Amino acid sequence: MAAAAASQACMKLKAIFPGALFVANTTQFEDQSLAIWSDTCVLTPTCVFLPSCAADIGKALPIIKKAGSRFSVRAGGHMPVPGAQSVEPGVFISLSNLNQRTLNRYSRTASIGPGQTWMEVYNWLAPYGLAVNGGRYPTVGVGGVLVGGGIGLFSSTQGWGCDNVVGFEAVLADGTIAHVTRKGKYSDLFWALRGGHNNFAIVTRFDVRYFEATSAYVKVVAWNASAQSTSEEFFSALDAYMAPGGGVDDPNVAIIPTVAAAPSLGLYEVITDQFALGTDSSPAAFANFSNVNGPIMFELGGQVFESWTKFPQLLEATGARGLRQLFWSVSFKADRRAISIANRTVIDMTFERLADAQNAAVALTYQPVSESWLKASERRGGNAIDLDPGLGTFIAGLIAIQWTDAADDARMNAFGVDVTAEIKRQTAELGFYVDFVYLNDAGPSQKPFSTYGRHGTSLQRLKHIQNRYDPDHFLDKYLAHGFALER
Ligand SMILES: Cc1cc2nc3c(=O)[nH]c(=O)nc-3n(C[C@H](O)[C@H](O)[C@H](O)COP(=O)(O)OP(=O)(O)OC[C@H]3O[C@@H](n4cnc5c(N)ncnc54)[C@H](O)[C@@H]3O)c2cc1C
Image (cartoon, rainbow, N blue to C red):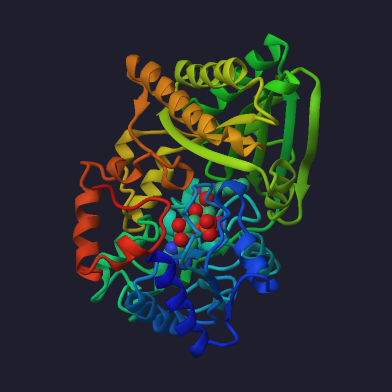
C-alpha cells in the first residue's frame, strides 16, 4: 500500500519534472539519498526529487498528497535521528539545488537557500567582512539548523540562529508559496517557523540579518585526561569561564568545551574550541585554560586569523561523517557540581557499558546558553523555543554517541536514554536540572516541544498554528520528521 502510493507519486512527478526525478541505480539518486551524516539515517527511498525553486515544491506537494505517499525533506542531512530526512518507501526531496545567496544592503539581510552548508554561506560573506549566526560546524545544513533553533558562534549577542531570520519563503501543506514575516497574515507562522522544525512548511529561503565580523582568535586543543589533575585543571578553567564576569559574559567570545571517551582505546580526553572575535591574541576569557597540563592530543590555531571563518574550518577536523551517530540533549545549571555530575556520569557509564562496542566513542559538550543570549532572543521578537531570560545562564549539554556496528544500534539508543536520565536524576536532586531539550541536539525518543515556552505554552500554540496551516494534517502524517509535535 505505502510502496504503491510512493511509486504512484514518483511516476506522476517524473511526468512533470523529467529532469529532476531520479530512481535507484542513477548517480543522482545515490548521491542525494546517501548525503546524510549518520549511517543510521540512510534509507532507500522510492525516488529522489530535486526541485530548483519553491514553485517546484509547490507543484509537487499536491501530487504527493493525492497519491497518499510519505515523503521526506533533506537539507544538510546532519540530524542524526533515523527518519528525520529520509524515507522508505516514499519521495525523498533534496533541497540541494535551493542554494541561493543574495546580499540585501538596504535591509542588511542575506537571503540564503536551505540546501547549502554553513561553510558555503560563511565563505561567501567573509570577503565582505560580514557574518550571520548559523551553525558552528562547517558542513551542517542551513535548513535544519534554522528551522530547529541554531546555536552559533555569535549567539551571546544574536540569540538563536532563527532569531535573526526576518523573513521565510515557505511552501505550505497545500502547495501555497508564502512570504512569512513578523507582520502580516502569516505572523503566527513566523513565530512557529522559528524553532518549530519541519512541522509547518518547507522553507525555501531564509532572509537573515547579517552583521560585521572580520578577524578572530581561534584555538582548538585536546588533552589526554587520564591523569586526574588534567581533568581537574580543565574543570576549574571551565568553572572560571562560567562564573559571572567570566568568558560566558564576554559578548565576543564563544567556547565549545567537551569531554570525550573512547573505551576500547582506554581514552578519556578534554577539549576546548575557543573563539574570540577581534584582534586580541590572548583573550582573557580563555586564560585559565593555559593552566591545563597534560599530554596534548592535538592543537590547532592558537592565534588571531584574518577571518573568523577559520573557526568552522578548523572544527571540521574534530568530526567524522559516515559512522553511526546519535545525539542526546540534557540541560542543567552552569554550576560546578552539575558540570561534574554530567562529566562523571557520561565517562563512567561509557567505560562501564560500551567497552566492547566496536569503535564506540561518546562526547559530552557543555554548550553555555548565557543570559545575554536569552535576552537577545527576546529582543528579536522571540520564537517557539521561548526560554525566559530569568532562567539565567545554563548549559545545554549535548551527548554525542558514535559507533560502527549496526548490531549495536539498540544498545546505543538505550545508552542515550539511560545516561540522560541519570544526569537528570542527579542534577534534579541538587536543584540544578533545567527542563530544556534542544530539538537540534535531541535523541529520537526525546520530547523537545514539551519543554518549550516559559510557561509550557509553546506546544499548545504550535498545535493551534499547525491546525490552521495544515488542517488535513498532511505534513504531520506524511512528511518524515525528526520530531513531530507531541500529542
Ligand atoms: C556534526 C554536527 C555539528 C552540528 N553543529 C551544530 C551547531 O553548531 N549548532 C546547532 O544549532 N546545531 C548543530 N548541529 C545540529 C543540527 O542543527 C541539526 O542536526 C540540524 O537539524 C541539521 O540540519 P541539516 O539541514 O544539516 O539536516 P537535515 O537532516 O537535512 O534536516 C534536519 C531536519 O530539518 C528538516 N528541514 C531541513 N531543512 C528544512 C527546510 N528548509 N524546511 C523545513 N524543514 C527542513 C528536515 O526535514 C529534517 O527533519 C550539528 C549536528 C552535527 C551532526
